[in-house]
Length: 498
Image (cartoon, rainbow, N blue to C red; front, side, top):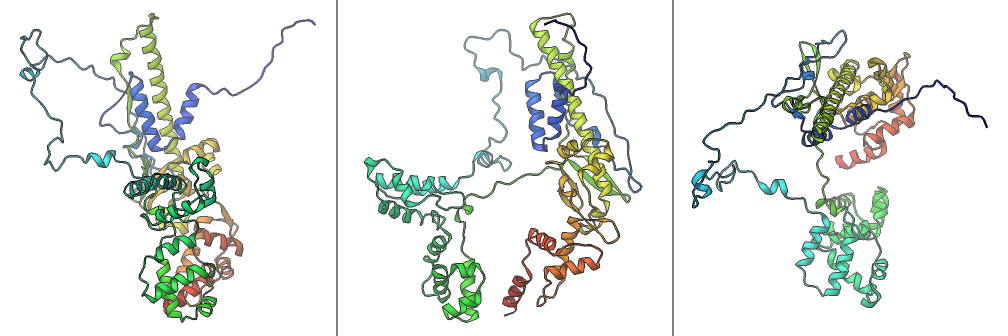
């Protein structure tokens, strides 16, 4: 086999570390970006933040277009960090101290701010450090206050471990009994007895095996002399499926009640909690910090970056001045590498801000009617439309639109909210699905309560307005809005009028 040299010409895309970093920063949310910046500041001594300075992009950058002002972005060059002189004042440590000198003889004792017991400005330490108790912690706390044998306490611990966040038991009594060591000889009756005790912990009904048991436990704690409570127990114990199907006629016939008594019983059931664990395990709050601020001034929409989340970074000139070009020592190499990483990070952060602002400008320009009139004026828009406007790839627009928020006079919206599918109109144009949903909501809100519009009638009204949409599509949009069907709205209206 003869060896030979061959020359081949080809193209391939290489992801440099700088490009990888820029892409990663682009898809970070505001809180994640702030954490990333702080980690870079902590790990890189040549990177520092300019205190009290906002980002240059936030200087009244406005959207393009005939009704918009395009103000040039103020780009401030990175100013070198001033070297902080070492002050020699009275607080410096004396070169010689007497043998019996104590610290308090030289320095005044200074208490940290907030240490005063009666100060109104003292921070509440527990509000920052205390973690919300979980449902399991809450139940174990009650278990520790309940007198039980060691065996029953072990069974209760297993039961609590098998309770989900909604407060429901996820395994059967048989499975719990079989899960113990055979030497303990745990019977199903013992597990059931302990389960009944746990079910009366706070919140009431926790550890129930199904919805019927959960509601029954809560109803048993109410006053027996109340007629509505007795009827509610009968419904839950025997006819819960009929109540779920809203078959009120059958309920009236089987329970031999009049409409007033049935309404009272249903109102009693509606006061119960089908997910008792949710009281102890609330969803943690999700804090949203807008990336972009949109304001209207002089009849023009202005778009700017939020200066609170776009800090200015620069290279520390003092450490940069210590780098020697021909020095290959470990310290000099460390400084040189960190200098390069600091420059890359600042450049990637600048690129992220530029891209974010370009996309926000384009969205505001295309959705100006929404900002002025509301959801019904939303224009159809997809990722490709913005990608073509800013000369970027659709994947880049997708990264920018994820977990990025815009503060507008109408509220805070995620960038993705402005992207929606469309339906063809009668005039050949497209209508946004957001606008169609808003129109359906308004039509239902304005309908006569005793004559609710069906999905077919809603589709006919939209068709008369120039929007061709099928009945199935109307039903899908209505359900997405959380609106009941026409029959359910009619029954609700009848109950309200009665």
